[in-house]
Amino acid sequence: MALHGAAAHAGDAGVQAIPSPGAGAVTPLVDLARRVAAEPGPAAVSRKLSAAADARAVDLIEGFQQEAGPPPADFAWVDLGSMARRELHCASDQDNALVWATTEAAASPYARDLAQHVIGGLADFGLRPCAGGFMADKWSMGLGEWCSHLRRCVAEPTPDAVLETDVFGDLRPIAGSLDTAVATEVLLSGSDSMRLLHGLAACATSFHLPLGLWGRIRGDEIDLKRAGLTPLVLMARLYGLRVRSPAVGTTDRLVAAGDAGLLGTRLTGDLCAAFDLFTALRLQRQLEQADAGATLTDKLPLAELSRDRLHELRDALKAVKTAQDTTAWTFRTDL
Image: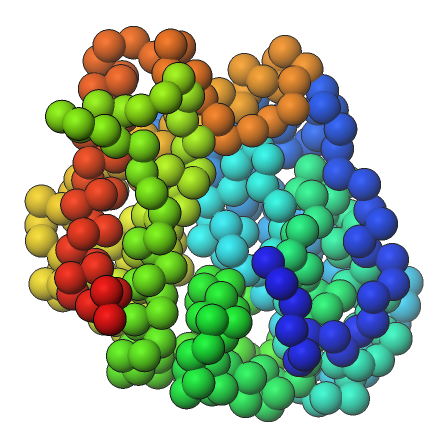
Protein backbone atom coordinates (compact mmCIF):
# COMPACT_ATOMS: atom_id res chain seq x y z
CA MET A 1 0.00 0.00 0.00
CA ALA A 2 1.23 3.48 -0.82
CA LEU A 3 2.14 6.15 1.68
CA HIS A 4 0.84 9.68 1.42
CA GLY A 5 1.59 13.12 2.82
CA ALA A 6 0.32 13.08 6.39
CA ALA A 7 2.03 9.77 7.05
CA ALA A 8 5.59 10.98 7.22
CA HIS A 9 5.88 12.49 10.69
CA ALA A 10 8.48 10.20 12.17
CA GLY A 11 11.01 9.94 9.35
CA ASP A 12 12.12 7.03 7.21
CA ALA A 13 14.94 5.59 9.30
CA GLY A 14 15.42 2.07 10.43
CA VAL A 15 12.28 0.07 10.38
CA GLN A 16 12.09 -0.86 6.71
CA ALA A 17 15.50 -2.53 7.05
CA ILE A 18 14.14 -5.12 9.48
CA PRO A 19 14.38 -8.50 7.74
CA SER A 20 11.38 -10.76 7.47
CA PRO A 21 11.82 -14.40 8.47
CA GLY A 22 13.22 -16.41 5.58
CA ALA A 23 11.88 -19.60 4.08
CA GLY A 24 11.86 -22.35 6.66
CA ALA A 25 12.19 -19.99 9.61
CA VAL A 26 10.02 -21.09 12.53
CA THR A 27 8.91 -17.93 14.27
CA PRO A 28 7.27 -17.74 17.69
CA LEU A 29 4.02 -16.95 15.86
CA VAL A 30 4.20 -20.16 13.82
CA ASP A 31 5.23 -22.18 16.86
CA LEU A 32 2.20 -20.88 18.76
CA ALA A 33 -0.07 -21.69 15.81
CA ARG A 34 1.14 -25.28 15.91
CA ARG A 35 0.37 -25.53 19.61
CA VAL A 36 -3.15 -24.08 19.38
CA ALA A 37 -4.15 -25.56 16.01
CA ALA A 38 -6.46 -28.01 17.77
CA GLU A 39 -8.60 -25.18 19.16
CA PRO A 40 -12.28 -25.56 18.19
CA GLY A 41 -12.67 -23.51 15.02
CA PRO A 42 -10.21 -21.39 13.04
CA ALA A 43 -11.45 -18.18 14.64
CA ALA A 44 -10.28 -19.43 18.04
CA VAL A 45 -6.80 -20.03 16.65
CA SER A 46 -6.68 -16.54 15.12
CA ARG A 47 -7.79 -15.00 18.41
CA LYS A 48 -5.07 -16.89 20.30
CA LEU A 49 -2.43 -15.63 17.86
CA SER A 50 -3.80 -12.09 18.07
CA ALA A 51 -3.88 -12.12 21.87
CA ALA A 52 -0.26 -13.27 21.94
CA ALA A 53 0.76 -10.53 19.50
CA ASP A 54 -1.05 -7.92 21.58
CA ALA A 55 0.67 -9.17 24.73
CA ARG A 56 4.05 -9.01 23.00
CA ALA A 57 3.39 -5.42 21.86
CA VAL A 58 2.33 -4.36 25.36
CA ASP A 59 5.46 -5.96 26.85
CA LEU A 60 7.62 -4.14 24.30
CA ILE A 61 5.94 -0.81 25.04
CA GLU A 62 6.30 -1.24 28.80
CA GLY A 63 9.92 -2.33 28.43
CA PHE A 64 10.67 0.73 26.31
CA GLN A 65 9.10 3.05 28.88
CA GLN A 66 11.17 1.50 31.66
CA GLU A 67 14.34 2.22 29.70
CA ALA A 68 13.45 5.57 28.09
CA GLY A 69 11.31 7.07 30.83
CA PRO A 70 7.76 8.42 30.70
CA PRO A 71 6.34 9.53 27.34
CA PRO A 72 6.17 13.25 26.47
CA ALA A 73 2.34 13.07 26.41
CA ASP A 74 -0.50 10.58 26.69
CA PHE A 75 -0.66 8.20 23.75
CA ALA A 76 -2.41 5.14 22.37
CA TRP A 77 -0.79 2.33 20.43
CA VAL A 78 -3.40 1.06 17.99
CA ASP A 79 -3.58 -2.11 15.96
CA LEU A 80 -4.75 -1.91 12.34
CA GLY A 81 -5.67 -4.53 9.76
CA SER A 82 -5.80 -8.20 10.71
CA MET A 83 -4.19 -7.41 14.06
CA ALA A 84 -7.08 -5.10 14.93
CA ARG A 85 -9.63 -7.61 13.67
CA ARG A 86 -8.00 -10.40 15.74
CA GLU A 87 -7.59 -12.42 12.55
CA LEU A 88 -3.87 -13.16 12.52
CA HIS A 89 -2.41 -16.11 10.64
CA CYS A 90 1.04 -17.66 10.38
CA ALA A 91 2.29 -15.22 7.72
CA SER A 92 0.57 -12.02 8.84
CA ASP A 93 2.32 -8.70 8.52
CA GLN A 94 1.93 -5.96 11.09
CA ASP A 95 -0.16 -2.81 10.76
CA ASN A 96 -0.15 -0.28 13.58
CA ALA A 97 -0.13 3.41 14.43
CA LEU A 98 0.47 5.86 17.26
CA VAL A 99 -2.04 8.45 18.43
CA TRP A 100 -0.69 11.18 20.71
CA ALA A 101 -2.32 13.87 22.79
CA THR A 102 -0.17 16.53 21.10
CA THR A 103 1.36 17.07 17.68
CA GLU A 104 4.74 17.81 19.24
CA ALA A 105 4.85 14.46 21.03
CA ALA A 106 3.87 12.65 17.82
CA ALA A 107 6.91 14.06 16.01
CA SER A 108 9.34 13.57 18.90
CA PRO A 109 12.39 11.28 18.98
CA TYR A 110 10.61 9.38 21.76
CA ALA A 111 7.73 8.53 19.41
CA ARG A 112 10.15 7.48 16.66
CA ASP A 113 12.22 5.29 18.96
CA LEU A 114 9.14 3.72 20.56
CA ALA A 115 7.76 2.82 17.15
CA GLN A 116 11.02 1.30 15.95
CA HIS A 117 11.41 -0.70 19.17
CA VAL A 118 7.94 -2.22 19.00
CA ILE A 119 7.97 -2.85 15.26
CA GLY A 120 11.33 -4.59 15.55
CA GLY A 121 10.12 -6.72 18.44
CA LEU A 122 6.98 -7.74 16.58
CA ALA A 123 9.11 -8.68 13.56
CA ASP A 124 11.14 -10.96 15.83
CA PHE A 125 7.85 -12.51 16.97
CA GLY A 126 7.01 -13.33 13.35
CA LEU A 127 4.95 -10.35 12.20
CA ARG A 128 6.81 -9.00 9.19
CA PRO A 129 6.80 -5.24 8.58
CA CYS A 130 3.98 -3.95 6.39
CA ALA A 131 5.24 -3.58 2.82
CA GLY A 132 2.96 -0.58 2.37
CA GLY A 133 4.37 1.22 5.40
CA PHE A 134 1.21 1.36 7.48
CA MET A 135 3.10 1.22 10.75
CA ALA A 136 3.70 3.48 13.72
CA ASP A 137 7.06 4.78 12.48
CA LYS A 138 5.20 6.56 9.67
CA TRP A 139 1.74 6.95 11.12
CA SER A 140 2.35 8.89 14.33
CA MET A 141 0.09 11.92 14.73
CA GLY A 142 -1.69 13.94 17.37
CA LEU A 143 -5.31 13.03 18.04
CA GLY A 144 -6.49 16.27 16.45
CA GLU A 145 -4.42 15.56 13.35
CA TRP A 146 -5.79 12.04 13.16
CA CYS A 147 -9.37 13.30 13.33
CA SER A 148 -8.71 15.95 10.67
CA HIS A 149 -7.07 13.40 8.41
CA LEU A 150 -9.92 10.92 8.79
CA ARG A 151 -12.52 13.66 8.20
CA ARG A 152 -10.80 14.47 4.90
CA CYS A 153 -10.90 10.80 3.93
CA VAL A 154 -14.63 10.71 4.61
CA ALA A 155 -15.43 14.07 3.01
CA GLU A 156 -13.14 13.73 -0.01
CA PRO A 157 -12.99 10.00 -0.86
CA THR A 158 -10.30 10.02 -3.52
CA PRO A 159 -8.80 6.61 -4.41
CA ASP A 160 -6.02 7.24 -1.88
CA ALA A 161 -8.57 8.24 0.76
CA VAL A 162 -10.60 5.09 0.12
CA LEU A 163 -7.45 3.01 0.55
CA GLU A 164 -6.64 4.71 3.84
CA THR A 165 -10.22 4.33 5.05
CA ASP A 166 -9.96 0.61 4.35
CA VAL A 167 -6.76 0.49 6.44
CA PHE A 168 -7.85 2.72 9.30
CA GLY A 169 -11.36 1.28 9.34
CA ASP A 170 -9.83 -1.51 11.43
CA LEU A 171 -8.60 0.40 14.47
CA ARG A 172 -8.24 -1.07 17.95
CA PRO A 173 -6.21 0.53 20.77
CA ILE A 174 -4.20 -1.96 22.82
CA ALA A 175 -1.89 0.16 25.00
CA GLY A 176 -1.56 3.67 26.38
CA SER A 177 -3.91 5.97 28.25
CA LEU A 178 -5.24 8.19 25.45
CA ASP A 179 -8.90 7.72 24.54
CA THR A 180 -9.26 7.32 20.77
CA ALA A 181 -13.06 7.01 20.69
CA VAL A 182 -13.42 10.34 18.87
CA ALA A 183 -11.34 8.99 15.95
CA THR A 184 -13.60 5.96 15.72
CA GLU A 185 -16.64 8.23 15.64
CA VAL A 186 -15.13 10.17 12.75
CA LEU A 187 -14.66 6.91 10.85
CA LEU A 188 -18.23 5.82 11.57
CA SER A 189 -19.51 9.13 10.20
CA GLY A 190 -18.59 7.69 6.81
CA SER A 191 -21.80 5.65 7.00
CA ASP A 192 -23.57 8.69 5.51
CA SER A 193 -21.07 9.31 2.69
CA MET A 194 -22.37 7.57 -0.40
CA ARG A 195 -19.24 8.58 -2.31
CA LEU A 196 -17.06 6.84 0.24
CA LEU A 197 -19.31 3.78 0.37
CA HIS A 198 -19.26 3.63 -3.43
CA GLY A 199 -15.46 3.68 -3.39
CA LEU A 200 -15.27 0.95 -0.77
CA ALA A 201 -17.78 -1.14 -2.72
CA ALA A 202 -15.82 -0.72 -5.95
CA CYS A 203 -12.70 -1.95 -4.20
CA ALA A 204 -14.49 -4.96 -2.69
CA THR A 205 -15.98 -5.99 -6.03
CA SER A 206 -12.77 -5.56 -8.03
CA PHE A 207 -11.45 -9.01 -7.08
CA HIS A 208 -12.24 -11.62 -9.72
CA LEU A 209 -13.08 -15.03 -8.31
CA PRO A 210 -11.83 -18.19 -10.09
CA LEU A 211 -15.27 -19.54 -10.91
CA GLY A 212 -16.01 -20.84 -14.40
CA LEU A 213 -19.06 -22.34 -16.06
CA TRP A 214 -21.36 -24.33 -13.77
CA GLY A 215 -19.55 -22.88 -10.78
CA ARG A 216 -16.39 -24.91 -11.26
CA ILE A 217 -13.15 -23.57 -9.80
CA ARG A 218 -10.69 -22.62 -12.54
CA GLY A 219 -7.01 -23.52 -12.39
CA ASP A 220 -4.92 -25.96 -10.38
CA GLU A 221 -4.57 -23.84 -7.25
CA ILE A 222 -6.38 -21.07 -5.43
CA ASP A 223 -5.03 -17.97 -3.72
CA LEU A 224 -7.16 -18.05 -0.57
CA LYS A 225 -6.41 -14.42 0.21
CA ARG A 226 -7.11 -12.76 -3.13
CA ALA A 227 -9.91 -15.10 -4.20
CA GLY A 228 -11.73 -15.29 -0.90
CA LEU A 229 -10.56 -13.60 2.25
CA THR A 230 -9.73 -10.12 0.94
CA PRO A 231 -13.00 -9.42 -0.91
CA LEU A 232 -14.92 -10.87 2.03
CA VAL A 233 -13.07 -8.71 4.58
CA LEU A 234 -13.59 -5.62 2.40
CA MET A 235 -17.31 -6.26 2.03
CA ALA A 236 -17.71 -6.87 5.76
CA ARG A 237 -15.97 -3.57 6.47
CA LEU A 238 -18.22 -1.79 3.96
CA TYR A 239 -21.44 -3.21 5.38
CA GLY A 240 -20.30 -2.72 8.96
CA LEU A 241 -19.68 0.94 8.19
CA ARG A 242 -23.01 1.31 6.39
CA VAL A 243 -24.90 0.16 9.50
CA ARG A 244 -22.53 2.20 11.71
CA SER A 245 -21.38 -0.84 13.65
CA PRO A 246 -18.41 -0.38 16.00
CA ALA A 247 -17.48 -4.04 15.43
CA VAL A 248 -14.02 -4.66 13.99
CA GLY A 249 -14.00 -8.41 13.33
CA THR A 250 -15.16 -9.67 9.94
CA THR A 251 -17.87 -12.06 11.12
CA ASP A 252 -19.06 -9.55 13.74
CA ARG A 253 -19.53 -6.97 10.99
CA LEU A 254 -21.38 -9.43 8.78
CA VAL A 255 -23.71 -10.35 11.64
CA ALA A 256 -24.31 -6.66 12.40
CA ALA A 257 -25.24 -6.05 8.76
CA GLY A 258 -27.51 -9.08 8.79
CA ASP A 259 -29.21 -7.98 12.01
CA ALA A 260 -29.81 -4.56 10.44
CA GLY A 261 -31.42 -6.16 7.39
CA LEU A 262 -28.74 -4.99 4.98
CA LEU A 263 -27.72 -8.58 4.24
CA GLY A 264 -30.13 -11.49 4.02
CA THR A 265 -30.06 -14.08 6.80
CA ARG A 266 -28.97 -16.89 4.49
CA LEU A 267 -26.27 -14.86 2.77
CA THR A 268 -24.94 -13.68 6.14
CA GLY A 269 -24.64 -17.27 7.32
CA ASP A 270 -23.05 -18.39 4.06
CA LEU A 271 -20.46 -15.59 4.22
CA CYS A 272 -19.56 -16.36 7.84
CA ALA A 273 -19.16 -20.03 6.92
CA ALA A 274 -17.03 -19.06 3.91
CA PHE A 275 -14.77 -16.93 6.09
CA ASP A 276 -14.27 -19.82 8.51
CA LEU A 277 -13.49 -22.21 5.66
CA PHE A 278 -10.95 -19.91 3.99
CA THR A 279 -9.30 -19.30 7.37
CA ALA A 280 -9.15 -23.00 8.22
CA LEU A 281 -7.72 -23.97 4.83
CA ARG A 282 -5.05 -21.30 5.03
CA LEU A 283 -4.05 -22.31 8.56
CA GLN A 284 -3.73 -25.96 7.57
CA ARG A 285 -1.77 -25.13 4.43
CA GLN A 286 0.64 -22.74 6.17
CA LEU A 287 1.37 -25.21 8.96
CA GLU A 288 2.14 -27.84 6.31
CA GLN A 289 4.46 -25.37 4.57
CA ALA A 290 6.18 -24.56 7.88
CA ASP A 291 6.70 -28.26 8.61
CA ALA A 292 8.28 -28.66 5.17
CA GLY A 293 10.56 -25.65 5.65
CA ALA A 294 8.87 -23.83 2.77
CA THR A 295 7.88 -20.20 2.39
CA LEU A 296 4.43 -19.52 3.83
CA THR A 297 1.89 -18.49 1.19
CA ASP A 298 -1.86 -18.15 0.71
CA LYS A 299 -1.92 -20.55 -2.25
CA LEU A 300 -3.51 -23.98 -2.01
CA PRO A 301 -3.26 -26.72 -4.68
CA LEU A 302 -6.76 -27.96 -5.39
CA ALA A 303 -5.50 -31.53 -5.83
CA GLU A 304 -4.84 -31.65 -2.09
CA LEU A 305 -8.53 -31.25 -1.27
CA SER A 306 -11.00 -34.07 -0.87
CA ARG A 307 -14.11 -34.07 -3.04
CA ASP A 308 -16.24 -32.90 -0.10
CA ARG A 309 -13.78 -30.13 0.80
CA LEU A 310 -13.64 -29.00 -2.82
CA HIS A 311 -17.42 -28.82 -2.86
CA GLU A 312 -17.37 -26.70 0.31
CA LEU A 313 -14.79 -24.39 -1.24
CA ARG A 314 -16.88 -23.98 -4.37
CA ASP A 315 -19.94 -23.09 -2.27
CA ALA A 316 -17.88 -20.57 -0.29
CA LEU A 317 -16.66 -18.87 -3.47
CA LYS A 318 -20.22 -18.77 -4.80
CA ALA A 319 -21.34 -17.02 -1.61
CA VAL A 320 -18.63 -14.39 -2.01
CA LYS A 321 -19.56 -13.91 -5.68
CA THR A 322 -23.23 -13.50 -4.74
CA ALA A 323 -22.25 -10.90 -2.16
CA GLN A 324 -20.11 -9.08 -4.72
CA ASP A 325 -23.00 -8.98 -7.18
CA THR A 326 -25.34 -7.71 -4.45
CA THR A 327 -22.79 -5.09 -3.43
CA ALA A 328 -22.25 -3.90 -7.00
CA TRP A 329 -26.00 -3.47 -7.47
CA THR A 330 -26.63 -1.86 -4.07
CA PHE A 331 -23.86 0.72 -4.38
CA ARG A 332 -24.01 1.10 -8.19
CA THR A 333 -20.35 0.45 -8.80
CA ASP A 334 -21.06 0.54 -12.54
CA LEU A 335 -21.51 4.32 -12.39
